[in-house]
Length: 410
Image (cartoon, rainbow, N blue to C red; front, side, top):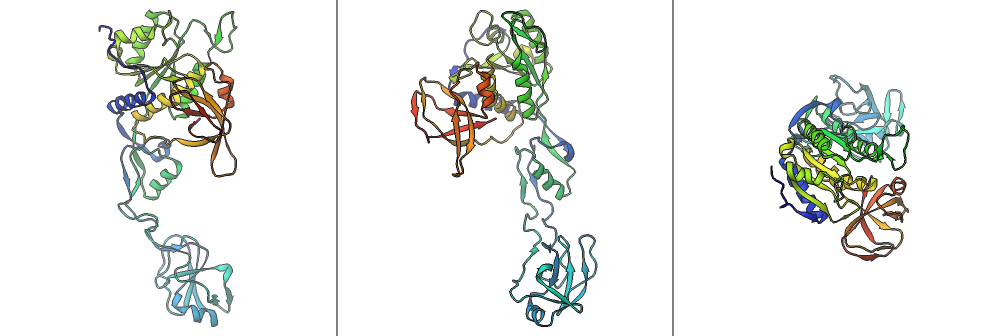
């Protein structure tokens, strides 16, 4: 297919996000069913509604005695006759008549006739009678049927991630499996003649391949199971062959390096000729050369090509790559967090910046973030010493200490 130049370039961050969202919606992955035991961390593919009230019956919230509150005066004076025990589990025919009470354990169904529970620590038991203080209120320590949810209530919405508590909610409804979006398959390529694998001798001019380790870990943190391919040399023919194979076998192909405008940056020209570029270059710091494309003759995969500097890989994955894989799964947007800058910061360029920083809680009810002054895109130690990206909007400006900014935790 002929090379095309009619694609957006140097797009704003918001426009890059919009384009990624639109393409991800087109390539949304199918829904299948998984047993609850395997569904943790997956994105729900269809709304879940309650088919049972929760709790399913009135039950005791404490270990104690179930009684009729109308008998409270009698209970305080002469006590209520203890007529039996009610434990959690199969229901007996035991009921509470006027002047009677039943020993009950937490979670046990409230027996017919009873409407209140008193804690065992608050009563006295004398000659088979239970004396209850007059101050007890009606309905105390009773969990009412349906007070947590009623039949038909929305329990978990499509697009939500199935956390441990959401899975427990499904199990409490008697569900054994749930509808989830398939997770994308991801191929990871690092590129460059200068790369050597950790553990090998390091020759002059060479560097160890840290990007593969970083990107594979970031993908696993997102719940994905990426496949690492051999490092690609700076050779267009070998690059084309590898991407062609991956493009027909995976949902997403991620590359690091070889995407700028240097003499050995072959990816932009290859994708111009063989794919449909959605955008190339974004007004970001770090990460400006990022490229996003649909496979074209390279297969049905999407291609997200990240810059080669390790901090650029971190920033573009957290802000664009993770957004893409979330979108493919129909995941609800991740909310941004806010924090106050703990020191002044001068931003001296026009691009939107993802500055590294460390979050902390000063005990004032607001997160604070300390910017890291080592802001160059090769300064991996600064990224490792940080735990968040500070989002600084487009335009040069002074940020006084205390300014509220968006942060992306990692």
